[in-house]
Length: 85
Image 1: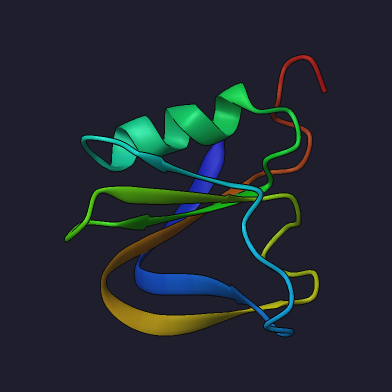
Image 2: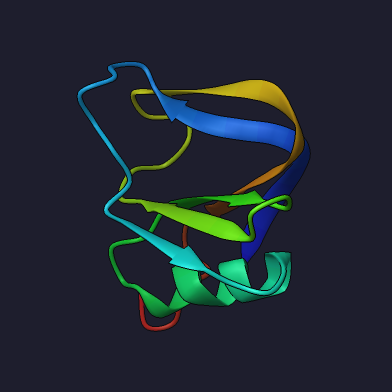
């Protein structure tokens, strides 16, 4: 299960870190599925204008910030909801 914030974007506090993968998807639901399919994924950004899905290995509350960005959604795995954990 994931929480989602519309018109928000996850960014690392340090610019030296990057998402572990970037995939092109058709919509935000496919971005959620891409994150849930990767065990190491904890947070994902979806950009509607480019259909780009960025997958991150850390939760948005760890070493990252959430900022306003129109046309973007940030999704975070809710602890304890992934099966298997």
